[in-house]
Length: 77
Image (tube, rainbow, N blue to C red; front, top):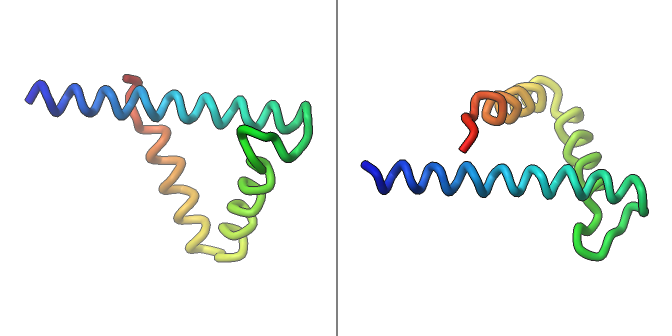
């Protein structure tokens, strides 16, 4: 059971790092420009994702709610 907890902790920590990198990419894209060498086209990708969710009506709203629920109910590593 300790191995499972170690894997869950590792995945939680990795998720935290990815979310921090995403936030950094958004801030850098706003300050420098849309197309960053390392982060790519993050802002346009997020805008496209939101647009796709918006076009799908209720299904998009349910998907967005599920994504937010997954991140909100996650415990810190």
